[in-house]
Image (cartoon, rainbow, N blue to C red; front, side):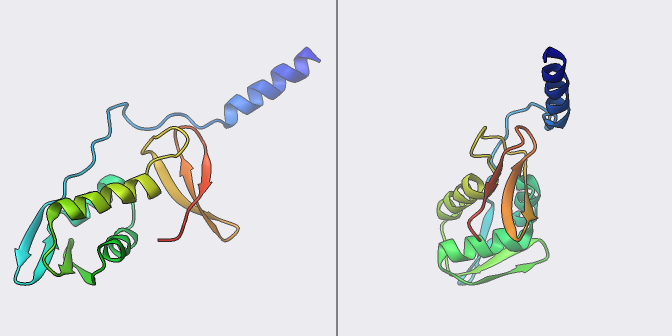
Length: 136
């Protein structure tokens, strides 16, 4: 019986994903905006999406919905209708990261969004947790 336990333990440990990332502390990207008439432009939108490892369309739709405005992607920038405060956009970005980037089990930002059996899951590369996502 001890051999069965050891075999199962070894098999289980092989299936646990290795921790990814460099071990450095994750820093939330800062929003860089500029005004253009009655529009607010998130200048570093592409870099933010890349740093969060999320699709630009998903992040753009989330921010537009949360900020209650329309917008569009243009050459790596997000052009939002209206004059919006940078701090307001930054706060919504933080909310996005909490809901769609950080693992609810271990708080690691090393996650990806996967679809299994028609359900979108937040899959953690560090601890292996899988959590269903609310749509965004």
